[in-house]
Image (cartoon, rainbow, N blue to C red; front, side, top):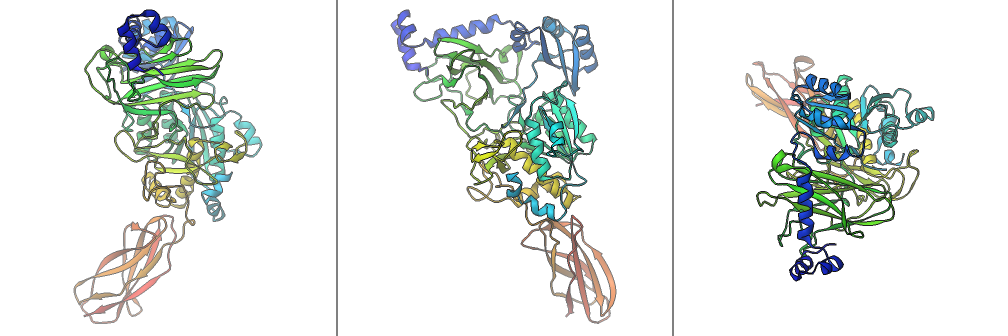
Length: 624
């Protein structure tokens, strides 16, 4: 912890040795960061993160923002690089680090930066908890429905096929530069989908950036995929309102929804890794205070060999003229070990910063500090995500609210939180809403902690098995596939509504920012609609209203009404699909009564979206 009040008092005392021995001079620290920032250069087209990385690596993977894709590709080739992927106005390439500056100067290039980092969210019992076996018994296995899993790797998937854990029909697709058989996270996700929807056609699509994510989404659309599930999130790609443009993960999700695909995304495991608030510097020290006491350092204990990456964004998108930076301070060695170097004021960088650090030997206490450079004095809302690529670590200051990651925060995605399959208790790490623009997230919660051939058996809630929202999302995806088979004409919005409407409410009544609509629970599978014709009245040569009460578990039904005079059918009237809740709703059609007085009646049959028909119900039409 670094406390402002103590630092200011020591600075006034004027004793350099006292400042070193007893506390930190925050003004000196702030000046150090500003000088380092100024010395990093002012190239407006080459991201400073790449300039720093080029000192360490001979080659760099980059994303090029351009309005002339063909010309930018040619510039990469001239620089000795290799094109890896392209989507929209983005080109992903690998090229010699020494060629970065020259590439940034090419007129076809608007900006050169690192790719966005996809972060997997997680490390048989859940299928039963969702009531999927009852659907399997009725013949609903997902047959005829295509589902895509987008992830960062499907290591060992061939062996899982040989072992019978994955179907032989899975289609592997490599958009991650030959690393499809690398990490095993996607394989564990695929196991759950295969258990939940064993008859579905499953695509295993590997991606490694926002560029290859867009390629994966486009491929899925071309294949006629109905459901996409992704247990991966991105940080600092947009504001957190789900409205990121083309080229962002938000853009890929919106494009999928517009193409008739339901996108299901893990909400994230960030409730214990996130801090949210507004910038606050009550002492004018140049650093954000995380506590009223003036503590400007959010400390976290990092074991040796463990990597810590920190992501900061503030709510002034798409560009900001205020420059905030991140700095990681080793409180044992009393020195900065990492810092971010974006330049929002002059280069118009997005309002986001990130930096990483790996503790080389021995545990270190690392202070996460937010510094402020010159610019207008504003206090924007901020989100700070602290990711450790290793054991779970707990920061000193955190807040679970607004911790849902992108693109699960998008209104075009069904965001999924995690509950233990055995107890339905919310996992403490499961990300909370609301979103930055005030919407409820997650939309739903589903089981995690389930036994996995990849991550081992379940022991107890929070221990063992496949933990995380990564395990929850594929349960929902598999259930969505079953619903799509049962109701082939359902749109993505209708499938989502079906799942949310039938969820088991948890927590406070109604949708909330912990559980969403509740825990995934498939109802009794695709029961036929129920229909009851209601007695009607009419007058000769006048239009009569024929009413009937209809209910259906699928949420919609249409009716066919036949009017009789004695045993003779006089007219058949078809009603369009309309809302039909489980509790029943009254629908009606219009019919003109003939001039002849007689005994009239009408009979009605209802059909749901799955093609299931009700029995016939009849009622008299009394004249008077």
